[in-house]
Image (cartoon, rainbow, N blue to C red; front, side, top):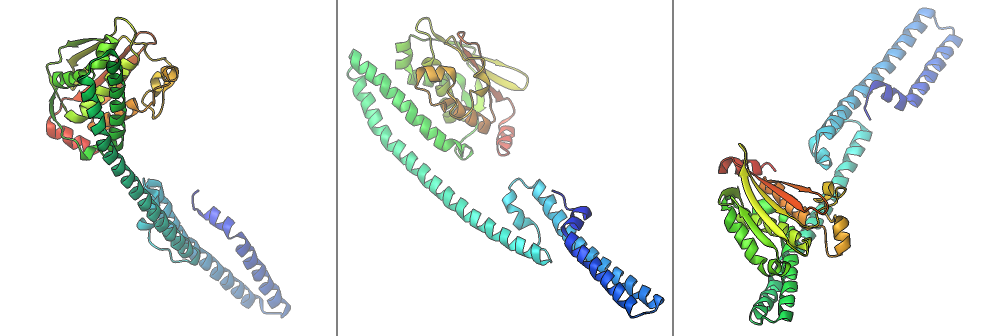
Length: 345
């Protein structure tokens, strides 16, 4: 809503009508006492001018405040900060409104502070719990490694799934402030791919997935730890929806003038065309996730979030029944240019 003279007159309509009623009452009263025409006219003109000046003054000071208030409010991203920007008005209703707004804002900031503290405490607890639970997971994997029966291999595969889910929780908790925990440098693609393959060796062997690498002896500007997690989630998704026979995972690299591009392609069950635009949405499982009943819809959401924070782009191409191609693009700018761009995210 805009503050203008018409809206002001509508708001003051009752006061204006009462003023004209008083104006007419004075006119008829003076006429009844046979006041001279010139004196009567002079009194009525002065009376009218006084009312007009009073009305104009009240309109101008209100218009000055509300115009500035609405201007600031429209341009503020954090609109609750409006009371910190505008000056206190000089009319009673405005002062009451401003004081109430200040108290509301103060109360909201206190609630936000308490909420953030609770969230921070909870995240710290989750991180501590994850680090503690990793110890029995690592011990279980070591026991499984030293006892290679068929049943133990199946247990080891399930432990690896638990480890991956636990790690997903950890990275989700940290992803909100990923910019505080990254180190951008040149990272070897082959080295990270090999680490991810070794990490998922048992599952890849169980699924009989063939690994292919093409032209991956290059480096990209990224954070090694976060990039390994991104790649691990992509590989896990590929294995989760791999075909029972002749499955493969193909890593290939190429460049454009501005970007370094890594493509990860599989020949799994693919993604339905209707689901493809929503795969990066939080908790979206899609058609395949509902079939398997073991998808949380968080993996690709976290991956997209991390890619945005690291200044990378990610794109999925797929046809149902024909596999998925994941396209990761990295900037080819210098280190300082990349770091500078990330500080603006």
